[in-house]
Length: 369
Image 1 (tube, rainbow, N blue to C red):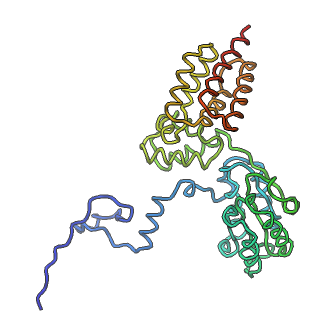
Image 2 (image 1 turned 30 degrees about the vertical axis):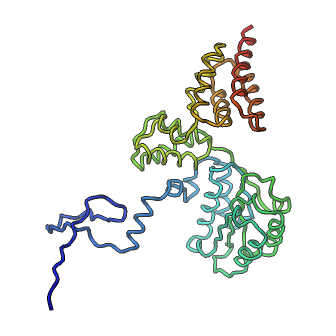
Image 3 (image 1 turned 90 degrees about the vertical axis):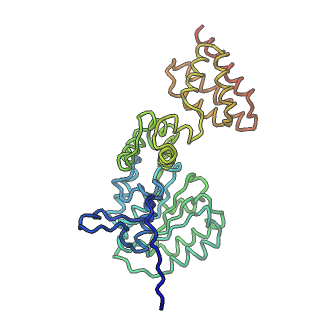
């Protein structure tokens, strides 16, 4: 039988996430140009690690890693030490660590039984009464072998999106299976959860993270990922985040992936927000009662296509830290707030923003007198 000769393809020189190179290659004395054979599971793991969002890659696993809201986290740490945890509701703005805290609590309480004894649902998707009757009730009925004093945990994220019927059914389920199951609800607005559920839970409230706490975490990530940055770039990320750690990490990763350098210009290109330095210059022109120069900056921002709500929001953020007299700053904030109301109600034209500049110039002139 004839033997067909086939030329082997040369190995590709381009780097890929699926190719795993051996760090000891060449040390054994062999001249093997091909990468070592790896299993499919190893390749998939490396792909996932390279493409994983940083909000998941750097999600805290223990209470000590959680940033901000120290008093509330310490309260939950006390719950974990005694073992008998009540049903809890954690309310607060997005990106402050509500779900992360609950998952850390579940890991400490359940240990190796975490996967079998935890049910995590996003109530904004599974928010109807059928979910409570089927998924939640069936999980509560399951028998799971746990250490003494431990309970199964059902985590409901975005619980304030649940319908009233689903919440009423959940109330009854919480009563029936209180001996074996604990419920942990995370929500942005606790007022949308019925009082019957609130009275059965320990209420914990989270606040926005401070700029210092977000900056500390960003520096850790930059060091771990070996990111090229300048201080004003990280300050811009903190400014756009507004107390939301998830937003800060997303903006940092997007800027790094897009430009391979984190500075204020690149951050605001990615986040697509009016540059605060332009807004600050515009407000200072209003303080000097120079309406023409202030309007030129406003017209430039409008020409760039920014939404009126984004412009007025950034004007408010910058005005809070403007270095002017406190009495003048309070009047500025008052006028900005009135225009913000009109824009939210639908009067989102350049005329409203131009009128704001004229009003700020008038206020500045009256304050000097």
